[in-house]
Figure 1: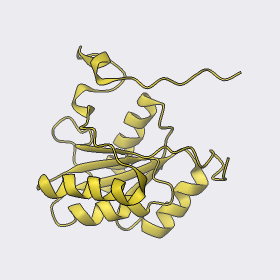
Figure 2: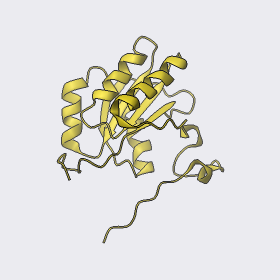
Figure 3: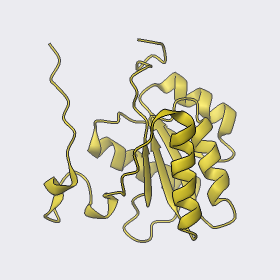
Length: 152
């Protein structure tokens, strides 16, 4: 029997300590469907010029991640995507690796996300200012793929 996963809300991080650094607590922009999801993220980036750091959790083959990378191109920004499936991440890297960084991480493992984000920044040229966390966190964990990159 699997242990139920829990979504930890920002209120849980009122103190400086915790599994996720306080600077990581993102703005929440809910969206329905991939077009609205991409438009919402792109709109946020357009309204916040400058060196943005974007992490897409549940990037699948990286299409949205690559579009977000285009939005920050030329501004010194950094965009990374993570997915639980190694084969999916390998495909994303093959398709879009020149525009964004990709890594394997479980959306429900906060410590793992922090670790992989740091590794991607270190190996793909992202900067580490302002706490080093993403300024925009995009979450797309619809549950359609498994760790093997196949439909459940």
